[in-house]
Amino acid sequence: MPQLKESLDFVLRAAYFALAPFLLVFIAQLFPVTGAVVQVALAVVAFFAGEATRRLASRSRLAAAVFSTQLDFEAHYRAHPPRPFLYYVAYPLLFPYWLSVPDARREFLLYKGYTLASFGLMVAWLGVQYYTLFPPELHLREFWPIAAGSLAAEAVVVLMFLMPLVTCVVHFHQQRAPRRLAALLLVGIVSLGSAAVRLERRRDPMVSYATRTRVRLRTAAKPWSAQAAQAKALRAAWAVLPKQKDDIDSDGKVEDESLAAAHAALVGFYRNDEAHAFDLWYTRQRGHAIMVLYFEARRGHPPIWLAMDRRRNTTHDSAALPAGAFVAMKHAAE
Image (cartoon, rainbow, N blue to C red; front, side, top):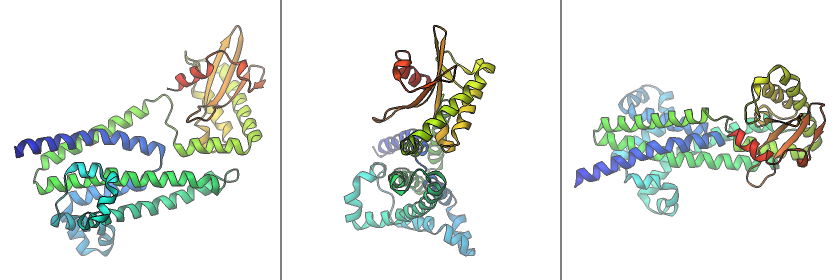
């Protein structure tokens, strides 16, 4: 019976290591969570090299400062073995419990050090982002909801990924089962690689929540300037298109040099990551060709788009587009 219980526990942990990287990669594409990822990596390194870390910390004050939190973790789990794995998977949902029970509260306070460290890195990075990506069209009132979402994502990553990972390392170290631990880490590495490859194979790169929000807010803040930038981008794409017929796919999606020319022209008003959130779509019916620069609508927001024909006439009238044009644009981007 104990052996069956141990086998089921390992299967549960393996399933988590197989699925969690997909969620982590998805969150990382939508929000900047570099600080949390760095903290996770430091924790794994320190736990795998526990004895070496202690020796290094005893000889170097700098190493002692860098790995102080990791050493505190190791000391805590030597005295208090980790709880069942499901406890850590569901940890964010157990909020009242781990604040009211003394042992659980002490464990949380250890992880709080990671949260504060990643929070500090995140605040510094958000400050840089604000001054480089928001003014002059956008201000603090547009910035703070994006910052709040990024900070919340950072906290979720620490709680949902760091705790199960660290406690798995501790558990199998204490069980003296290095093969099982190595198998779990191999599953996690393969899963992480698969998630990354799947994202790379997307026809369009995933656009972060912050970037999408900035595109929408910047366009609304200066609509005439935004439309002028979009018209400039379409003219740049049309100038390249006759020389690059291969840029147009069978579904109308325009890529390669024409799309690159449009993105470069947009950077005059939009920021670089915002410009790359736009796509081009081309259609020709009864000898009438038209190209559309568009930013896909999501979560109840209308699409941002502008159309231009060969004569460089622009229109924002959806009646000028063929039926089903917006559905075709959406499918072309997938």
